[in-house]
Amino acid sequence: MAQGSLKGGRQVLELARRGMVAPSSPTRWLVALRWMAIAGMGITTWVAGRLVPALDPLPLWKVLGALVAANVAWTAVAARGAGDRDALVTLQIAQDVAALTGVLWLSGGVTNPFACFLAFQIVLAGLLGTPRGMLVVTALAVAGAGLLSWAAPLNYAGAVEGAQATELLAQVVALGALGVFMGFFVFAYAQRLQAYREQATRHEKLAALGRTLGAMAHELNTPLGTIVLAGKELGHITRESGTAEAQQLAVTVVEEAQRASDIIALLRGYVRPDARVEVIDAGVFIPAWVDKELNRLSFTGERVVRAGQPAHAAVLRVALLQVLTNVLSNAVDAMRQAARPRLEVEVTDDGEQVDVSVRDNGPGIDPALLPRLGEPFQTTKEDRGGTGLGLYVSGLLAERMGARLRLESRPGEGTRVTLSLKRSGGQG
Image 1: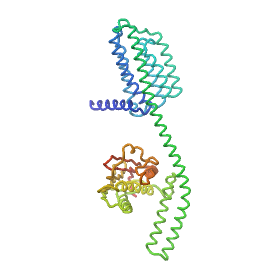
Image 2 (image 1 turned 45 degrees about the horizontal axis):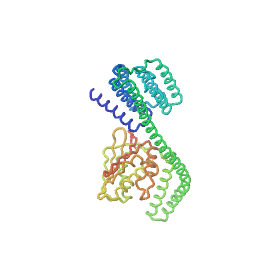
Image 3 (image 1 turned 60 degrees about the horizontal axis):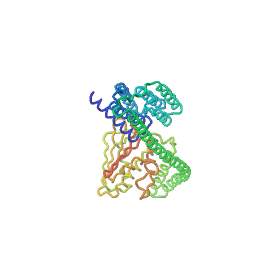
Image 4 (image 1 turned 180 degrees about the vertical axis):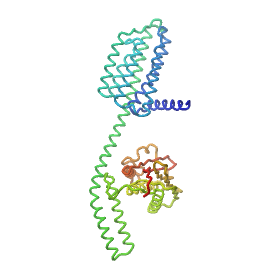
């Protein structure tokens, strides 16, 4: 029980820390800002108790304790990613307005220099919430200000540094604190706007790529269809007058042209009726294809292929073959300068999915580039003519058959690409 509580506390602290450094959602922003506000109010209350002996800080500490408990709850909500709905964002800010009104009521009302933070809550609601939410928060803030006009004013009598000097100090601290909060918020909001701009740029590239692929697919389908028909005719001719080798070449032409046509169709989201999902034993099928592809790629390094018990997976065969071809080609290319190239392929069935992992001992990938791989035009092989479309296309094909492609790499330790396939209990 104690270990669970400790673990939960660490998660809360870690989320708070991440929210402070780079808040990524409205709830996390509010959680981070609230922790800052609680810390600031705690320090201010402690200092005020020392400078103004007439002030009773106990009620303020009780309100701060309630705020701590509430923010722990909101931190847990943020950890589950369930707190960014518009209504909950408005609820959080409304709660903060009520809490701030309570603190101000106990410490001078509108004569407290920190009353300006009521206006800051309206700014938060305007930028993080909806127009309706901002109106709700504005109404609460105005109502709170009206209520606070009836609160007892701050009494600086008996202040250690004198009433006038203490009041001036409080005003300076309040303005400084407001500046810190505004600065933090503007910085975080600017980061989010930058992320949105980058995302918009990527979406524009994706849209352009989609239009290009669509046009290319339309133009390529006709010559590919002609190649398929011509290959079949060539096969008939070679069966009558050609050699066995010529017949095999004709068959290869037909198969590869049909495969290219199927890949284009998959990228366009169209699956031919005969290109149905089928169940294969990945423990047998994958090793055979890996050996064939590595021979085609003239890979002379060490090969380690591990496939234990039968692992039945539901796949689109043409998509699976192309993904494997792309991944193996990248792995072989990554090891071109390795002293002892070693490629490991492993097929495992964990009872929920079938994982096919391909690991090379190449130089690995720069951590700064790793999160962007899989996006169009992001490549580690630009100097060698890479387009950055291989992993992108592989990801699309994997998605078409309900699979998932993920990549792990560390500089100097090689790269592992894992294709997680849907498991099937049946046999193909």
